[in-house]
Every structure is written in structure tokens, then in C-alpha cells.
Image (cartoon, rainbow, N blue to C red; front, top):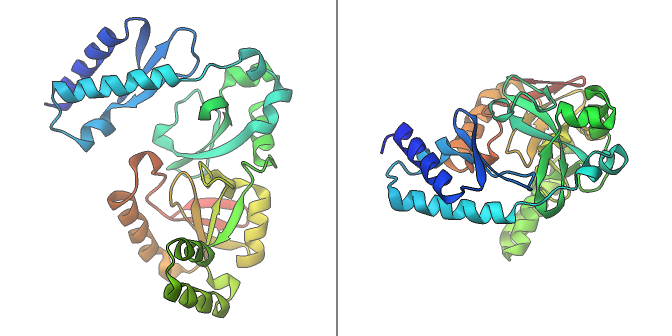
Length: 287
């Protein structure tokens, strides 16, 4: 089945299955299913589904519709009055990093690089995420700059940057898998390496949507103590980034490694960027 035929047939089946819902094409390859009375709508990435399985038939479309039905049933309701209160929401603001192509125009954002945008979000019950837009800023009586600065300095432990030595992460994995010989080797390596020669993972305490912690001034300050005013940022995923000391000679090898991981191993929804980034004196640029 060709892509456009698949997309057309999917929309038709969705309309039949959800007559009480509005089926909106929110972007060229995205379909949102909005149920009246619920403020969070599942968004379907039609292009991603098709790329994963081009041998799509009617049975597979029916399976997609079934999964969406469950997503709609589980979609959380939002307390509009609470959401509109700055006092209730200001401590829930956090920065997410997303590929620029996935960010809709009405969302409050600021560019990190050409490929990556910083999006200001809040987390609601049941794991739902709301991206902040101009309408919410107006309801709060806050400017875009005020909202961004509040998110940057949010010290809630769920969103505060955590810097973890990659070797320590490997040690944990080795301990969980009871790889005693490898653990001894990791300890030896960790003890012999200077801090500036190590790699560090930056995320939040949950390891979920934590790549944006690299924007927090406190996180950047701690990394500067290790690497000085310049270091390399490897965009591992939307959940975390890996930081290492700057070396011009390593850039192309790092780029190749990032792209290999992204295209061979990475879940498409976790993809952030194909290129390394450089932090230098408070600014981040893509190379």
C-alpha cells in the first residue's frame, strides 16, 4: 500500500471508529484524535508507522485503531483552573529538548541549534505532558522570557540536572548483571582517569526527558568546573546527553558514532540530533 493511500484509509477508519472525536491533521504527517471533554489528544505519527512496516493491510490498520482507542480512554483530564494558575504551575515548568521539525509553531520555544529546540513544558497527572504556548503565558500574566527563565532555574528534584560519570553507570550495569570481572576492570579505569578525561551523562533524576537539563545554569556551571569553558555535548536522546572534553580531532568520530546509534539502535521517538554540539562560554552550537 502506498503511503498516501495508507494515510487516507487510516483517517477514514479513525472517523468510523471514533465518531464522537475530532480527527485533525495537525501537521503534514501527524493526526490528532481529540475527544470532547478531554484536553490531551493522542497524536499519531503516520510517517513513522508507515516507515516501520510498509506492508500494511486492513488488519494492521484495524490493530492501529484498537491501540488508539485505548490511548484515548487513558488520556488524562486537565484541571483548567489549576493549569491557569501561575502559583500552581511555576514549580512544574521544565525544559525539554526536541528536534526542531517536531515543534509546532504556537509552542513557546527558543532555539538551541538549527536542529534542536528548547520547549517549555509542564507534567500533569498520569504522565501527560503539556507544551506551553502563548495562551497559557497570557493566562499567567507572564512573558515568554519570564516563563523560560523560571523553567531554567526550576530546582524541583524531578527536573534538576544530574551529572553522572559514564564509568559509574557502567559499574551499576555490571553490578546488576553480576559481571564481577568487568566490575574490577571498571574500578581500575575509574581510579586511573582524571575527571576531565571522563565522559559524563546529563539527565534528571528519573532519566526521562532529561536532555534539557544541559540548559540549566547550575548544570553548566558544574560541567565548567570539570572541563573549563568548552566541552562537547553528544545528543544521546531526548532523555539524556553525554558530555566530554573538547577535542577538534574527535569531532568526526563522535559524529559518526552518534549517527550510527541514532539510525541503528535509537527509538525514533527518542531521537534528538545527528550532530555533536559544542558548549563554549555559555553558548551551545551544533557542529
